[in-house]
Length: 326
Image (cartoon, rainbow, N blue to C red):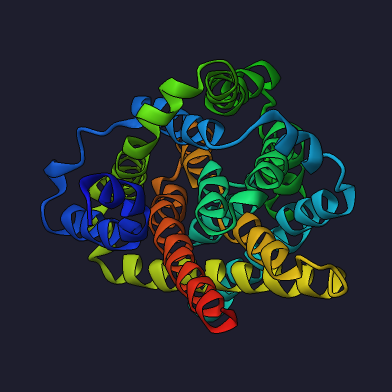
């Protein structure tokens, strides 16, 4: 296998590198604590740029022709997911007798928009669905400025101020500009794209892995405590149920669609992967008790690991199905 082929196929190593990053965060936190919150926007922007380089504007125009799929993804993010979050909040507080602030942290994770990493996960699994995923994530992110505070007020009675300008700036910086840059580069300078394209997968793997491991490095002591272990189990159960709910919901709604399996995977990523970094930022800014921030911090690593393990499973299954059909 040539070096070029190894570079192109490096995406298949993402789950392994993610696990290595998480283990590194647990064993030697200083290795990742340099990656502070100021690096997340450019890191996520780079991942969106990589998607843009591998797409074209027609892909996004086609995505807008699927309103039913967009609405279903939105329903999964802002109806199914918050209800699951509230359920696990009740389990945490009433069954496990954990502090109510921990339950509030779980609800906070459930009420934020979809993660930009979900679009990258979709790109790795079903590249043709990446524009649809980006549209879903961008819509949920844009409306989260109003929907997230409303959901938090309804579910836990916490009133948050609304920063419309800040949210719009964040979406533009992290999603719109990098994708537009990638699309324009692909459109007007295809030769440059052909040169840089093989190097984007390994760099993307590295960036995604650091994004997953760094928040854990900052909270490793909490993770080792009995409280941290209990929260870890709750966060895993919440994300697992969210992935499953998105998969089942889309499978039922689009059971007659020709690309139902690809849609199920896409909406499963949208429902199961939340913008936990946004939840972490909100927890630190608007909640006095630091325990509220523990579920979002753990969620950042766990949902990334679970999402990209699914990428590995589904891509391998897809390759096996292709071999059997041929």
